[in-house]
Length: 241
Ligand SMILES: NC(=O)c1ccc[n+]([C@@H]2O[C@H](COP(=O)([O-])OP(=O)(O)OC[C@H]3O[C@@H](n4cnc5c(N)ncnc54)[C@H](OP(=O)(O)O)[C@@H]3O)[C@@H](O)[C@H]2O)c1
Image: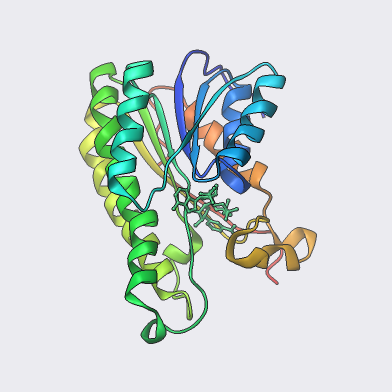
């Protein structure tokens, strides 16, 4: 896959310490973006950062708990102070609770799911959209899920947070496209990561998408020509098992 360069663009990637987010960070850095990595595990973030820098790319790490709105606001302020803007925001971090039906879920687990999967993307969009509007360009790319299209028994709050993410972001897309800021959704099926206790790793090779496959799609979206707006991408494993 050949992309034009993202040289000099500031790309913020949440959940960049492992899995899909780490793959996205590596890919955008390879294309020349200055990547800003965030998650809670600073040691894991630094490993991804070191890999990117060793490959000749730019990366920095920020510890931030996305369940905490004050930490998100402090993180965004730090990015804007250091770089003056954000060109690409990838709302990737997400959590799921798949341990039983909704009526057995605690309020705390429900609130944590919604805070990380739905409130954090809102707070980050609110923090960074003004700098994109001022620059007349920007991408806000959201990693949703095929769970946002289907009922998910024993994962109702996760599905609800992702259905909500879709509704919020397709609406924000209509608000921001007049400013040449493109807000998009990528909705994968099972991806081979540690997510959901590594459920995808128990599938056959053709039954689980690789994190790099999602990173390639993020790169495609972030390098579209100015007039083109891919608003939503659904990604399925080839084999259904
Ligand atoms: N894997 C799949 O099958 C699949 C399918 C469809 C959609 N997705 C979506 O893809 C996205 C990435 O998933 P993944 O498979 O890469 O999952 P993963 O391997 O579990 O990684 C999740 C990332 O989110 C970060 N994170 C979790 N809680 C956080 C918090 N409170 N504050 C800040 N960061 C937090 C984690 O870092 P720390 O733990 O260091 O904070 C980690 O970097 C999620 O939105 C998920 O819903 C995954």
